[in-house]
Image (cartoon, rainbow, N blue to C red):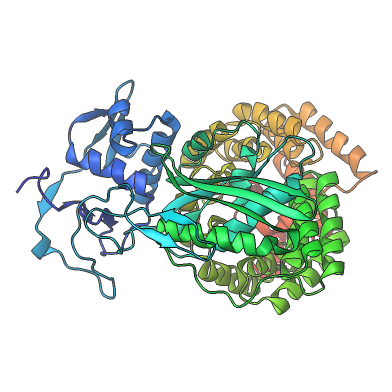
Length: 614
């Protein structure tokens, strides 16, 4: 039996099951990988020891489709993370510059009889590679629409062996003007929430899909960029107190329409339209939606105001976030039992502090009240749980409470990349390295094209002293969206931690240009200048921040970090005392951020950690 004919191959204790399209680690536990990553690995293993060109791999993983090389790069990165390879290691996959990739681990075939299935893992009947075929079944649903199913050859009703990945694109207006962007995005957001309840479906979050709202957006190209297998594309028109919507489910590989329907209802029935679309998409994909007890609101006005709040909140700049909070308040006034609006308010207030330098005292109490109210109203709502957990993390410094709610959010939404990345943040801050990186890698698997999630993963690597890996990862992330300020900012952070001070300066400058209200990028520039011996320039930045602080809030930790880099310990501890007094949110990184290493041996620093229960 050879690797070309084997059902299972093993290498360094890992087992790749070609039939089930599954990778098991040395303990027999399935490794979470997206379907295209599995396809990439399978092709490399089948050609172990040979150099496989990028074009050949693209054709193997995306047959009959034209995709960008970045999709393949993301798959290779995901595989390397899954194998735990560090920078410079080449135990599994080697990059051959200018040619492609080579799988170099020793591969040996394993018989099915020799396989030992892990306990309590469902063993599915053997099946050959899943194929998407034409019309397999007709699902007649409430409104009488027809849904075309994605079905494996010879098995009409069996579920797929791994979660399918789809994207719900923002709905487009039927006519360009007037358009209601909040409701167009709101329709997509509601469907994302509804379909995300399925444990067998990975749904890209609104933060990833909202950039594909242009009227001339090609849905298939959006699907390729989002690295999904199918997209939901639709139109929406609200006029004369009626909602008119169309929706279609498209297979990204070949553009085939798998399902489509039209709806014309009273505007008061918009929730029923959303439910119908979600159920029919689920039917076309042959998945079951998890039951939910009740809708978040039946108040159309409250829903519309909430979606306007979401639209502004997602822009992450202070005037927009504050406007979003105003809409959340109006939504709550319209329906005081609307848990999502409370969760949205808590999240928006957190972003004011972390991205826009608003004093924590201005919003912390309100954020806590909003998050507590969301939990009281909807204890099983994932958004309420991670809103409450993040308030405990950033404002209360209550680590057990943060872990309780963030872990609960992961349990409630196991395929939510946001839930995993937020839990990773807590574990990273507490120095629980392996748990942090495990959660971060799962988040990347679920949403490999998110600049935010990739940037946070890079930050966790930097905080865990994996400096080369952090810089490499953040350079990858910057290419995903060069205009995303946080990617440049965290790349500057990683470069400073890695001792590459000159390289950090242009990245800090780029972050400041893209997000001028935040002052942490100025801080990183000052630290880099101080470490380069350019003391006068570092002090000039410090003086500029001091002038700003006389008119507006600048987190005291910024000054403490700069004084630490300049070697002024006593001054640094003065600022740390001020930071404790105002509950500076960035103190949560005190335990693990390498920029504090110059103070760690001082008893005053250990006393500060004890005051924060770190």
